[in-house]
Image (tube, rainbow, N blue to C red):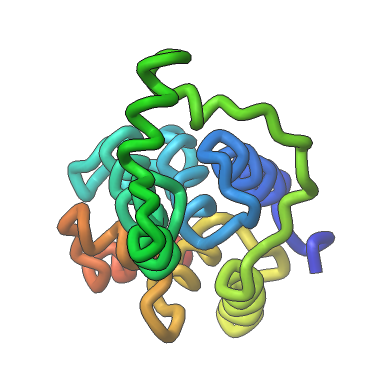
Amino acid sequence: MFERFTRETRNLVMRAVEQAASLHHERVGTGHILMAMFADAGGPTGSALNQIGSSFDEARRALQEVSSPSASGFDDLNAQALRELGIDLEEIRETVEDAFGAGALDRVARPQPTRRFTDAAKQATFLAFKGAKQLRHRRMDSRHLLLALLDQPGQTAAQLVLDRLGADRSQLRTRLMESLQV
């Protein structure tokens, strides 16, 4: 399937992997793909996303908000279980940061994992390929992928980010479809 991607789309997927790495996320999801699109301001999807009036930095913050389980790195259930044992994660974080500096726990050296794509990201890629085929396009570009992110069933990280930014997904979809009909 990747042989049908345009060079621009292949580069976008590689930038999505970089976005996941920069956020210390082990898997590449729909939000990382969206971030790669925002980062490419001059590309077709970057231009479309810039029209919603949000910046890359705003989108990155929104992704961190929707994808971060908590400031401690634990989800609420695990944090609650530790609290019940008398372990206060925020107190531990404060103690470590007092000793080693702000963000010390965020800088932990970790081996570079091979980042796999989430099921939602894989589904978006498949839907983009399918959408390109339905439009009788021989190659899949980033606009097909953004359409797939918009139309994906369920509530994906990319959709949550767009909603948090106040994007009109319907209007964005219409603009993308118009640009693909040329």
